Length: 433
Ligand code: S3P
Image (tube, rainbow, N blue to C red; front, top):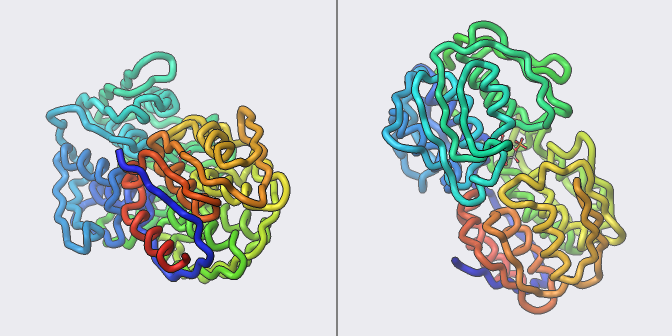
């Protein structure tokens, strides 16, 4: 397991792009596979999580062609969702999106499949997809009350449409139900406590599959086949987030990120950074499947804020790096309504609290969040990623602000979402010494 050593930098100025959006890359593969012909995906994220989705679909008989560009361009031969039974268990690796969305697809396939994953994924609850998908007629078996993986899924050619009131605002749950809804006879609808990211709905529209949103409910009609199309994946705002905080928290810093996704259901971090006092300029182009554009950041002194409620799903994956911003801000930042963080790739509330304390930051932990009091100086420390990519990257950024050396243990996990992060960090460190 590799370690990463990070030292404080004096300046920060950069113009960069980030790899493709992880959520959109997964969906681009799945909807292309469900479509009626060839689809070229560009800007695809060649990280381990999305590879798990591609390999899973390949095991179900889907043909892919690599078109070069370091794995970022792929042609998928849509098979109208006429998948074949995989010969062995499908390994979803570290990827919750692969397992949950694929469960929705497999619910409508008339064979039995086993889905498994790594040590982190096999601790994550699948009950949230088991419940609605069983109501639709699939059979899903996992371990214990929380339905932990490995999962055994027995699908059916035709599913029963349902209306489901999801107790959690989860795009993974919503998407699993919508994917199964394509195989249901009639209208399937889902409502959520707050709107989660809407990439599935946008991609369905892009592939000309009828779905509608009425208030907090989305509906889809079964029996539709996505029309094959080429698709461009924007850069991942969740990856850009690390550099946004690195620039925003440093006086005089300037950052320009281009070709990044600016979907309103994903950019909660930008609103938070503005509240904390950062200067941000966005330029958005709405002409593709997803809004994308550039973000310019001018750094300054950050101040504390409160993060909670409806805003949480729009920045759920950015809370580790926002916690680092809070540690660098004046005052006490409160993060609440975020108990979902306890069931991500790690328990991100305790992972953030423990690692920030190691860097000399006072943190109070609650069931659904934490209070973080900013400090004048972070202390370099030994950080444990717990195999969680976003913890590893958030604390690598913290290391850029810390006195002495910060050592991040176990950074191989960064490959799941951001191949190239360490190279980018090393270049910035060399320039900013
Ligand atoms: C994702 C949705 C989010 C997010 C995850 C990716 C998706 O999870 O945390 O990294 O692609 O649908 P939930 O919406 O299930 O909380």
